[in-house]
Length: 445
Image (cartoon, rainbow, N blue to C red; front, top):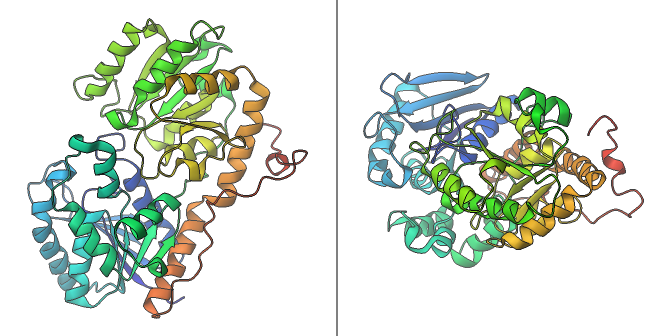
């Protein structure tokens, strides 16, 4: 494939942002890793995002072959993403001005999130470059799940619909998103490619439980069971559901499990900066498990494998989740995942093989599955090995970038979107006697 200049448009999610805040999460990671791996394939990648600090350089050489371009659109400080829509014409104009000034005409524009999709179509009108779009989250799904709590601009769903019908190709990260794009937005099935997000298998890798607990200062937990949640602390993530499940287990599991909650807007857990911490602390106290719930604050990717590794099992039970990268991170660290059967989680977590799926908002069901896992360390270890093997086989960024590049080539050639192997599709389980043979790494806990 010829070397391309690719414009990744990501108005609110810069690869350079610190993770853990309300608007800094999976999309930042996905754009960062996709850019790096496309560049590794030989392409030149510019990531266009909005300037959020007055001293941020206009252009940052982020990685070999990757530049981050900070565009002036609105005030040079963080603005909640749902308040950015009025700034998009200025963002578009700044992006076009940069392309002209820098002679950086893209061969293809890839929009990330709905507002960037609008900008990408505006660029196609001005420059003629074809557009690929990844939404990362869909307004119809969000409105259905959040109701009056949805703070999206009222124009969102109409704009998304126009993008879904006009873009040259759409990327769905999981089957439920593909179905929503086709059934809810009227996208042509032949233009929707199923290409999952992935995980950095070098940064997220197995470590012994003892070493991980020692590293994070949890040696005092001894051999007691530990459940770990990693992610943003937002109401829709429903960490309260996990706290309630831990409370249900305090009399049936000896010793009772310790819940590690990793996330927040600051490195030290701060209920002012992250109000959900205060909500969860109050809930834990009311249930009598304040001493069994520890908040770790925000941790960056280089540290996270130790927190995943300290747990016997990872848990995530949101009641709304477009895709969810943290289950993949936990699986890459060799830990089974108990997750809510929503969004992309049933696509990544194979029930009974790499973890378990439970209904959202059901602490009793979650407690039952967690209790079964914690009572059977050998089963946890087997599932952790299978989880790592599944990630290595099906959810690497190198594989995702390769499939994305194949999609770009088809779009540029005017060819039908190829049947790109959707490697996140759960495989047919192997026979019981060798289903874990693919993950026979004896050094893992």
